[in-house]
Image 1 (cartoon, rainbow, N blue to C red):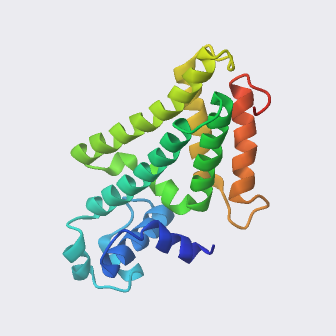
Image 2 (cartoon, one colour):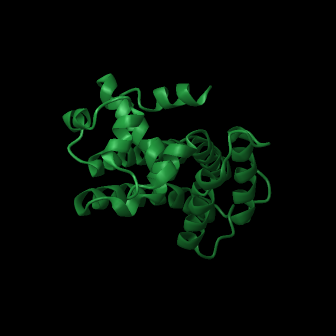
Length: 206
């Protein structure tokens, strides 16, 4: 799937078309220039619209970031909850969680960079809402690791610290992934799933 097709699929629920175009333009601008260096004129120009047209759909630049961040965090949380609640051993569920979480961050690396690294630019109320989603994300991975420890499958003396390490490893893919690189998103996901199983003391996927 090409980059343009991925962007269209990613924001398929955003309507009307003008609002979707503005969101995709904002993602590209924030990822390229950073939130604070991006102006509403930059975003509107990328979308082929006038700055005044932007305000018909979004009251502020921060509202655009909030919408992007909310969609991205809910997608990520859904991936991890589905893996947590799936069938299989803790090792299988953890591998599935990492595989899919990494793949999403690779396939949507531009959006993921904005979602993960521009959090501090949100207003206080929006920031609190997104941080709550991040806590739920942390909790989904922690639940799987705790299941593995309880079953005697994982050797993890510090569950919270290990959860943070696993999530940090996965999220960082968005920072360095290159679509023209040697590894595909799926290959990176497989590699990271294997690495994480070793981190938790499970040398081989069950």
